[in-house]
Amino acid sequence: MIPLSLDEIAAATGGEVHGGAGIVVTADACMDSRAVAHGGLFVAVAGERVDGHEYAGAAHAAGAAAILATRPTSAPTVVVADAVTALGRLARHVLDQLPDVQVLAVTGSQGKTGTKDYLAAVLAGAGPTVATAGNFNNEIGLPLTVLRADAETAYLVVEMGARRIGDLAHLCAIAPPDVAAVVNVGTAHIGEFGSREAIAQAKGEIVEALTPEGTAVLGADDPVVLAMAARTRGRVLTFGRDGDVSWRGTSADDLGRPTFELGHAGQWHPVSLAQLGAHQLVNAAAAATMALAVGVPLAGVAVSLSAARPGSRWRMEVHERVDGVLVINDAYNANPASMEAAINTLGAIGRRGRRTVAVLGEMRELGGEAERAHVLVGMAAAMAGIDVIVAVGPMANAFAQGATRHFGWTGQVVATAGRDEALDWVRNNVLVGDVVLVKASRGVALEHVADGLLDAGPGRGEEGD
Image (cartoon, rainbow, N blue to C red; front, side, top):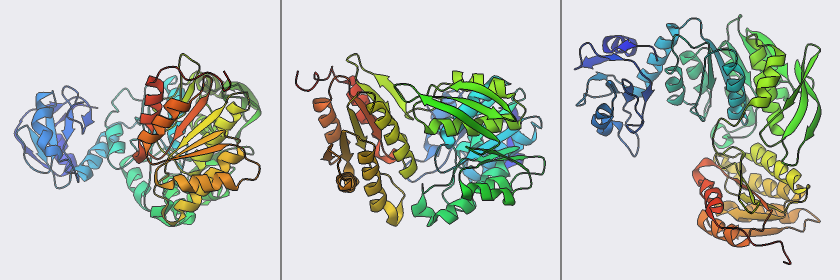
């Protein structure tokens, strides 16, 4: 973060300074009093369960230079009408002081975090890069990311999420993009939007925010995304099988890690990804296209993609126990498309000779489509040849119904009431050499199953031993 006096923060946010004359904030902003940087800004937000104002004193004692809050605190404070709105205004003020920073924004129903992580890895080799941590992609997380930028930053990579129409327009007003990408339009959050058409309307706001000098990066294989070309003033670059950036010669190793040639404008360069799943190829291609838009050569992009390692936790995160049990922790979030992609990756690994176990929890925010979506995921697991489905929670029966509807599937469904019961089952039934996928929406917290399985002792021997 660039140094800012409290007077300057007050002017940018429409606030008033209470105490701390002459104090300058020199480090990042945060909302966790346990993670404040010395000289940073603690943002106190009153939530449904926790009021950040109660932690202002602790944050100041831990090194925060000042507090941004809606009422005076025991520490030097800039008092504003609304802390979240003020945070966004402050982020825009900082970005306006950094005219040489190029902002690259990505959204999509699934894959946006993976694309963001690949892009950050590529751009880090081209210049100082600040990127969204995890999926801090809302009206709080995005400004906190922007405030990490300083005079040395060349690239600001931001992930943008939306739960309603207007959200992305708001985020783009805080961080106007130079490059804006829409990876895809699926059914994540359809319970809140109501239809895929409404989701597309919302996602397209990111390319509407571009100036004529900007670049819209669109998935060529999704007609709904490709149609967004008509909604932008910027130039358009596409990625996909028939996109401006494409791939050929795709193969995968025993763990489903893709190898391919990445192509653009007649040039082709080899890429071998470290992440599991064929869907990672699309994320990598989207990131490559965004990097090309800011002038990174294709050869350098290919090298950086091959060197990239996962930048966000619990996303196809692979761990191997000493007995050879492989645990794939993809528990950060889930929607129908990402569920199917993860299941297909598991199935591909199983075809190399391992028994496959899918621990699947509820996908949330699907509204009236919820039960049908879970049935379809169960069918997808059976079609992928998964050997054991451990279905967790209130949608366990829907998973089971889908799996058993697939004619000829000879696998097993284990319905469990919650994650503790699921963990107990896998601990007692996993076999040496099994590969176990754990996936659900964030609120289900199935990472506890993955962690518990990894903490357990060696599994039983092969069946029949």
